[in-house]
Image 1 (cartoon, rainbow, N blue to C red):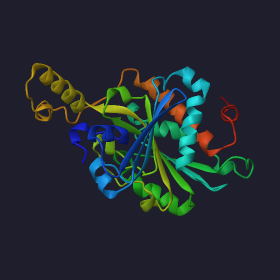
Image 2 (cartoon, rainbow, N blue to C red):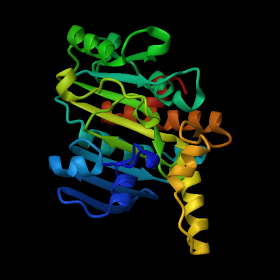
Image 3 (cartoon, helix red, strand yellow):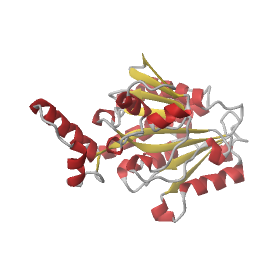
Image 4 (cartoon, rainbow, N blue to C red):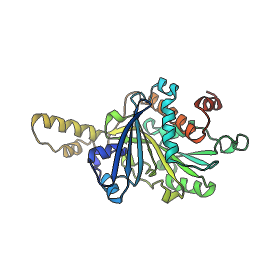
Length: 298
């Protein structure tokens, strides 16, 4: 089970911290300037040990993820689109519901609503533009604003409109500061809104919604307790001393603090645009990125 002082939404980080786990496979490759890591959780025992549900988790890490030239090039968006399509097999013409999870008023948590809002919404245009897959989007907000559980809202929409699949977009929490806004995770295991900040809500999964659910996210925050624990353990190691890093972190009140990078506003805008590009390429093949941007009016 994942140590709560090392909270991470990234399966690759959980696997790296845990080491070899029976029933959990991890492979790595390089493409489009990115490191691609696949973690496959195949058994319940492996899922329990890793602290992640059964499924496939793909992460792409690129140091220039939020750089304007990377988005302009389009190669990374195309590679992300391939991975999304591989985990979200859809019959021709099947509709997709985009769910932008998070609080749009809180910049580090606004990635989901921004990305869903930037992607093409085409369900109402499908008859006029049949080459486009019918795509809808909802931005359910957070329970503190609406008084409604996100899972309840999404389930109600699925019952009413019967999408072929759900693509849930969310900001994540990382274990390493180097992963912040440099890594994208795509998973077919669904998502539990708020899990990265310890705020567990009803999960959006195939079992709950009745349709395939793919989660797509980028880490925007890291827990301060994780940074503090790493620093304390490094100092203790260099001094040859022993220290209760977890206890000290709790005593200092770092457990509830989240840290996000400087320049988060611009980085989240860039990351949201990249995700929107990848989503549109995955859902509206064989359109090119140039075609999609022309439709958007960019």
